[in-house]
Image 1 (cartoon, rainbow, N blue to C red):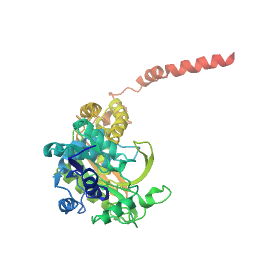
Image 2 (cartoon, rainbow, N blue to C red):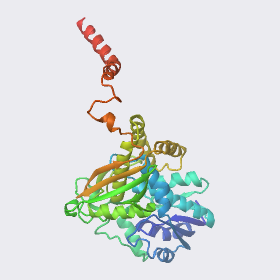
Image 3 (cartoon, one colour):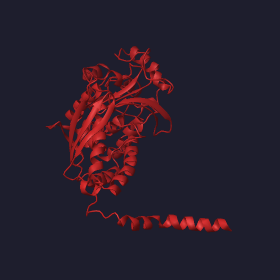
Length: 404
């Protein structure tokens, strides 16, 4: 496939670092490196532009996407209650559509005639990037080096980088594949490739071991408006600042670690460790507020759709009519999810202390064991008779049939 100018989704990590010289060698093309700041932190973006240009890129663009990431991608996911396979809060999954959107926009602005990403042919990210490309720029062809080159391992990639004098943080002695943003950090590779191995202490980066967390617990009050987190302990915060602060506090108390063997979209199982301190707190508090403000039928139906929403995000189908339709449903359910939730953090444990909302559906007069005019307990007999009618009929029929 000929290409004169390629927009590369660039992170400065091992894979995308070697892709720049590889593209120039194999396609003879100009490379525009595109990077979105979604809160990688840890100095990951320092010197990124210089590194890209010295690696052979003609241009490097870095855009601050942190507030957009939280407000337009993370908050919808929180309001939906989306959790993949009981544990995963979708930190990497939900960032990919935004990064791919930025890449497409930059490609169109700079006149690129192809798109390129560094996702492997075994992973989910190739799907997430390319489904976004198909939604936003279906006319642009895609170059996926991991499906073309003869590099077959991280070790091979490191060898290639050393031959081209590209500085790396990874070494052959300890190779973790990590992805970090405001919402989480993921860890894969090295000893984690065997599910029988416990993660070493060196894996974790955002949180302390719960056993080493402070003996004194922390209490936080989070306020929501229509399902969106808006303040922490009475202080109004932007989305990105809210997540940053909760990551710091949650990490200090050992909140948000998971170890998961998950089912990848491409058909295989993989093992990863994830840290999502702030996200764990926010999802928990939001769920507690919904328990106070949603009626039973809506809450239970929303729980069913939350599984579909999580799978949709995991599979990279963000820019689809289905996601927009699900968001419309979620918007309707969140109209009254406004109030405050106080939580307690202690050595990896998260407990709810109080829930308050002007839209609370909890009636102390009705729920109390004290008899009252609002609920006539004698009505329960007829209710049970109607609900139990099919059960009674089935039992009677079965009993008569067994007599024959």
